[in-house]
Length: 368
Image (cartoon, rainbow, N blue to C red):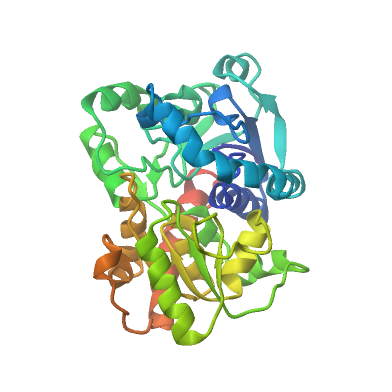
C-alpha cells in the first residue's frame, strides 16, 4: 500500500485548517493510500491559548504590542475556558492520523517518517507573512531525495511576494516533482520563479456534501439562524446581520465574540463549525473556509473583505464559482444579490474537482 505523508498547518485551532487537513488525508485513504499527517508543531505554531502572545509581526512593537494583546485578551480568555480548545483537541485525536510529534525542522531532517510520497498540503503554508512561509519544512526539504514530493493546493495567501521571498522559495519549490496551488495568484507568483504549476481546489471540495454531513451525527442544532463569522469585528457587517435578522425574524449566531451579537451556543470546534453552516439560513463572513462550506452546503451567503491583505483567496474562490457579486470590499456598499443558481455553481465546482482528482491520481497515487 502506498504510504503518503502530508505536512500542513493542521493544529492551529482554526476550523478551516483542521477540516482541510482531514479532507486531504481522508480523500487519499479513500483512493487506497495509507495517509498520515506529519505532526509538525514548531514553537511558532504553539502560541494558541497563550494569553500574552503576539503572533502577527505587524503588531510586535512597543505600545502597539500591548494594545494588540489587550484587544485580543477577552476572546482568548473566552476560548480558553469555553471548552472550544477541548473540541479541537478531540477532533485532532479522533479524525487525524498523525505521526509522532516533531517540534523543529532539524527533528524532521534527523528522523523523517519513511514513505513513498510526501505532500506539502493546503491552506496558507507558503504565506511569507507568517513564519511557516519561511520554514523549509513546508517545502518538504526534509524528505529523502529519492522519494516523490509534491504540493497540493498550497497557498501564498497574498497576491504578490517580495523578490527576497521569491529568491528564498525558488530553490525549495524547484525540488518538488509536481506543484499545485489553490489560487491563480499563486500561479502568477510561480511563473515569476519559472516553475510550472497547476491550479487545484481546496481539499474540502474533494469530499462531497454527503461525506461532510455524515460527520455531523449528534451535532445538530435547530436550523434557521443567520451565521456571522467576522475576524475583524466590523460594526458595518454586524449592521447587515441585524438587517437580515429583522427582515427574516431569524436569530444571529456569531462564531467569534463581538460587541453586540449573541455567541453561538456551541463554542464551536471543527464539527460544530460545520453544523453551524449546514443549519444556517444565511452566512455572513470574511472566512475563506466559511465561504467554501457555504458553497458545499448550498447556503445563501455574503463575503466581505478582511483588513489584512488576504482577500485574493476568497475573491479567487468566488470567481471559480462565478459568484463575484457575493463579495464586498466595503460593507457600506452592500446590496442584496440575485439568488444563487446552485445547479450551475455545482457544475463549476465539480469540474474543478475533476482536475484536482486527476492531479492527485497522476502525481501521487500513480493512477492514469
